[in-house]
Length: 462
Image (cartoon, rainbow, N blue to C red; front, top):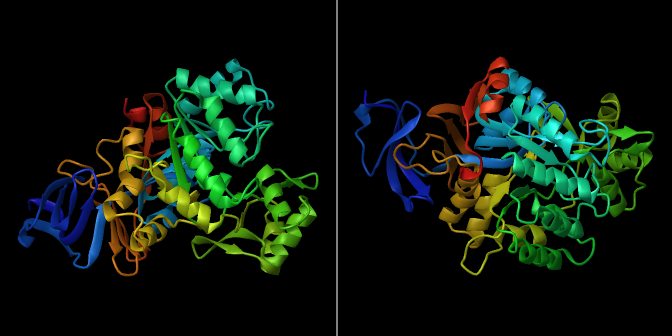
């Protein structure tokens, strides 16, 4: 047979190759072999007639969680169900991300960062350049492609934050930042400080929507201010997620939530920023505890939520409905004068946190008329692939990786998730296993030692 798999009658949308038409796609050896208006059905070992389905380059999620610390073992299944083919664990720790991928993977491509966390991965909130360099090299050797600053949750001093960004850039490594330092929190001022600290360095600024919740002005005005400021920093890759729910640590120490974000969310609804305040917020339904049920994670509150949080030793993850629709919309749709998007990509900040809504919420913006289908593809796949230097992903031209997401055009449900030509999810049944880890030359051995396939990437398209 000429093709391993043939997808017939696809409503194919491809931003890079400027295609929006009914096409057939022939797949061979994990690659797109042929894209034509008509390919004979008898040329394939396996055939799928996708009439009425939207077929796009595989969704690339630049911000999710799939480690033992955040996300957990259900993350891979949840991502496959959501149509994600490549996913970026933006916290780690990388060793547990790899271990869970080996045991509970769904056949996806993943990459990972380790997190800079005072008292855990660095000594305190003012690590030296040499300590940051040691942690970075240890992270790269462990399979990560860099590290993340968790400033909104566990802040460093502004000076140490700047050192961390510069250290990663000087080493050609990846650095992401949840904005916030000891001087400014996870809000608009913290975001503006993050950009100033980055300067001309490359940086991934996480979830722009999270900084526009109305702490200093109405959310709409904060969103507009964020969009204006971002345009001054073309070296910064930005993403936003589309869910009304956030995700933050439920862990308490000495009667207080460890995360500053958790404390702020409690205060937003007039709960005390304490362990007792968090318990009451879960009981009342303002906070929702993340719990695995039937192989996926769900949000629970009330007495059920409290009991499960206590059973988790007052740790785990909680979600609060704190993301206003107005600022999420403006940030998702905001454009520069040339028509390109200010915020490069959609993310989920989900994985094992139940808010993997890139496809349904992104297509809702298409239905609203704010995005075209090609622009949906740009923000869900092409832009992130380009940023990461993944030339074979983000499009479905001949020779591209056969990473494909198939979507019901009417109800926006994901019907199939295909990775390297292999079906990993079909109509709600996840069949993929393991993972291919995108890493550096330095991290290949650690990935192989974890029992996973490694694929070396060229960061930022270098």
